[in-house]
Length: 397
Image (cartoon, rainbow, N blue to C red; front, side):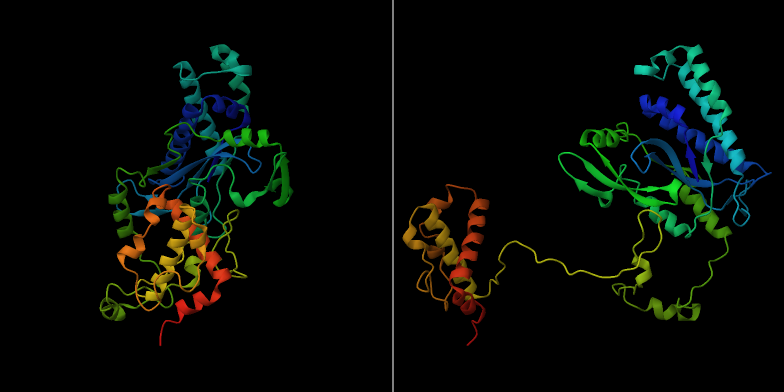
């Protein structure tokens, strides 16, 4: 379910984000609870989660609230669960009319209390008569309230919205090209059969559109209402689970007679998972995606890892450190990493030989820089003296 502000109100919202966004949450929540609580429609206390979005596909300013609403509610006396009719929750036209009246009433009250500020071409709306005249035609238009059952089930809706709860405006995968002159990104044109198109903007315009959607500091964009409100969620959800019939048993789940065997398994035993539990979903529509290929991870670039139990590895490490220390103290002759440099491969170097004269050079720079030089020296030794690596990896008699 989606509650959307018309463009005339969005202009006021942009200059008063904290106030108008808060009114949007309040109006949507009051509308849902009022109609759902009416015995003519559902006659129950519902619970829902609301998430604020302020953008469209092209990053334009488009404030709206997504609401995830279970298909039913708790009876007023708390003795039963009242389910809605299959495929139908509450009438959209009544939702739209009530939402319009509740929001505009709250907006007018905020203006009367002096909570709204106006700038630029809207500065004249600070006058009460001008503001009332501005709102007059908005009372006559139909406001958009979209109420529909999820196409791919409730799990897909939760997965879809969960990707956008802490994301702003656009995700990285939609960015096609970024240069000094322009930014190109893909967008879905819902008016043209959801066709994927490409939009190119100047960098300044792209940044301007992106910054339209920065929320006021500390604003809570995810809110819970009804029996999902934080104050009484635990108790009411427990009561609802008691009233609802048990879910149908899925094929392959343990039966009651198998319960002792399941309980006998150790706590550390891993629960087998199926591919469906981690099946990736489309970030746009929430539908299941098919894995066509799995790419191997690229080799990690980093430190040379050598076993401390290998005397040969210690000898090579010692030799690399000597090369680094020699370069720091400007002794080119010691950079020759021949087989005679350092201790023999059959015995580990002592503390004296590891320290050697390199401490004075190592103190001239940080330990991190010294480590980077070790890596460079290691690569050089591996390229110029491959037999050294062979000896290090074949230390067994």
